[in-house]
Amino acid sequence: ITFAKTAPMPGNIGLISQSGAIGAYLFDWAKSENLGFSKFVSLGNRAGLTETDFLTFLSADPDTKVIGLYLESFADGQKFLSITSRLSRKKPIVVIFGGQTQAGKQAALSHTAALSPETAVIKTALTQAGCIQVDNLEAFTGLLEIFSLEPPLVDNDLVIVTNAGGPGILAADKADAVRLKVERPTDVRGDALAEQFNTAFRQVIKDKIKDAFLIILTPQTMTQLELTCQAVVKQFKHIKKPIVVSLLGGEITAKAKEILRKNRIATIDFPQKAVDYLSILFQYWHNRLKQTAYPVRQSSLIKVPGLRLQPGQQTWQQIKILAKAYHLPLVATKIVKENSLLQLIKEFGFPLVLKADPTEALHRTEKKALFLNLNSAKTVQKYFNQLKSRFTTILIQPQIRSGHELFIGVKRPPSFPPLLTIGSGGIYTEIYQDVGHTFLPVNKTSALKLLAQTKLGQILQGARGLPPTNLRPVIDLILNVSQLALNFPQIEEININPAIINQNKVDIVDIKISAYEETPRRL
Image 1 (cartoon, rainbow, N blue to C red):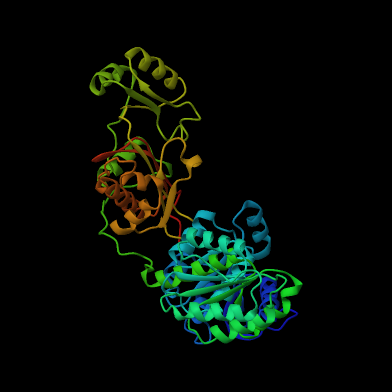
Image 2 (cartoon, helix red, strand yellow; image 1 turned 90 degrees about the vertical axis):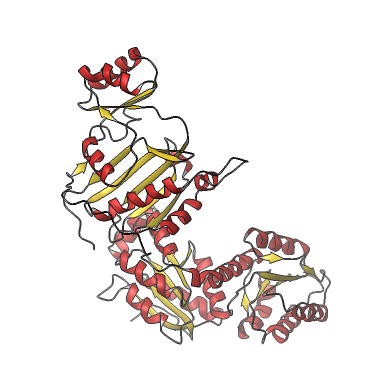
């Protein structure tokens, strides 16, 4: 049962959609492009079967070449990750996900009666599952067309043939930006007739090294649009390499486009879009066998029997026990009282840090519950008195010399495995947004890969002539935090910000751990 006015044509696109209206739109769009569908699933609120069941079916369907997926929520995030990360190695899965903003989430809630996950969760899930994520219907339909019509693109040498200098230059710029190799575009000039195009086509086809072709055609005074498109069909129809035609213009190009569509040659209106789509085609076929199935193989877990967590924020004493068990390198930190203040000043030396226990002040900077670089007993006493008047438990620690600041966080999104976030730390973490995400578990290889995605990771590997940092302590810390989160399902969140990285060591300056009232069941 469907509200669609247009009956779908048969073809090789498999479509799964939580929105019936988007399905109806795609039927009409596909018919106008001479494309069709192998299967269509209107998922709605899911009555028993889920997107993962239908993805499994379509991946084995011989009539389906590419899968399009419109979602507003995940039925089971962990199952989606586990299964789709394997299926995406077989066939491209193009995904558009609705409900990533607050307004979109409210609309999705009324539409499908399911809460949408956070944007970071969505993007990480789709990336880790090997899906091709887009954020608009134009790119969604464009990529469905490209993957439906084009053979695999396994190398990145692109030929551009154009009758217009400007569009050719824009296409070459875009190709360079998306790492497609392109030599100077073949410009047949604005007064070129169909026969001149034909000659250029024969010449570029002779170059066996080239992997894909982009023809840019603009409707100028001498341009023979229909005859030129017939030449494209004649020369390229039987070449088993991707060929895309960018026909710029409106009504005047309609008949020429129809010639290409009838012969199943991809037509993309703008050359930069065409280059984008060819780049994604290349990336998919180049990387698909490198796609890592979830979950990754992990190191053996540390087992710590007898440890129990209290609901809510953990005290510093509890955090110390966990840190010792999981080899988390905490800066020497002690609870300070009035009668032990002078003794601890002598023990630690200057400069010093004073702060409230995490159970009493979660965001210490905003609550003025953190004082740094205290260089005299008088100053320490002053700020100790200020903290004592507002908080019960006060912590003292030595100030660590400056280094690179690292953020490590773990959260548990509903229905998904724990989400690990690492990147640049400090008080500007939210502003810099220099972070990478992945779902646990991780191993050394995946942790290094995640760190390398961040600017901090690039700096640590050596930048501006500086020597590279020893990454082993950093990776060990990431792995140990991950094991802690996996061993304790009742942990809701871990927040390390910052850990200070110096040449051969890492020091955790601040860490917060919170636990659920009761261990959540996986949805």
